[in-house]
Length: 215
Image (cartoon, rainbow, N blue to C red; front, side, top):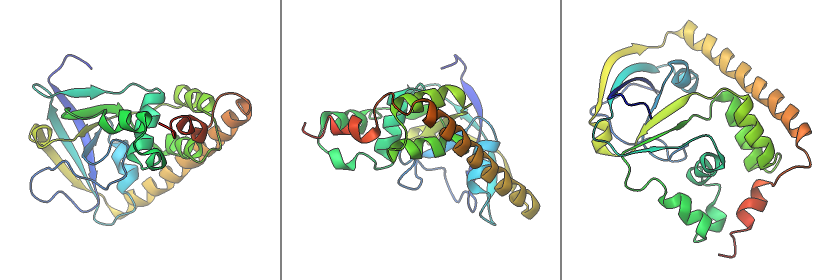
C-alpha cells in the first residue's frame, strides 16, 4: 500500500447512488458485499454499460485510520474470490473454507486486483475445472489487472467523498458493450493458449478444495 492518505477512485452504478454510500452490493462479488471502487474509470464502466440509467462516479477515498487488507495476486487472491462467489460451499466447515471465511474479518477496506473482462474468463475456467492452478498463475502474470478497493464497513464508506457524477450516454454505452465483449474474447483466446501450455501441469480447482473436504 502506498504511503498516501487519499486515493482518486471510480465507481459505477446501474441507476445512480441514492442516499449515503453503503457497504453493500450484490452477494457474489470478488470480495463479498461492499462498495467497490476501481483505480481506472474503464474498470466500472464495462460492468454497468448494459444499463440505461448507468452513472460513473469519481471519488476521493481517505484511507487514514482504516484497517486495510491488501491482497496480492496469488492463489490466495483466487481462492478468496472463489469463497466469495460461493465456489467453496461444498467444503463448508473445512480448514480451507474457514481460512477464507475469516480472512477479511476486522478490516474496513480490502485492496486487491480486479477480475476484469479478460481475467473473469480465465477464473471461470479455473473454477469449472478446465485449467489448472499453474495455468491460472501464468494467466495472472500474462494479463494486466487493475486494482480495486472495496469498502466493507460503514466506517470505510464514511471516508468516501463524491467528486463527480456522470450519466452514461447511449452511444457511449454501445461502444463500451462492444469493448467489453472484445476483452472477453481476448480472455478466451489467452485462456486457450495457456490451457494448451499447462495441460498436464498443476492441480485443478476440485482437486485443491477436495483435499480439504474431509476436514
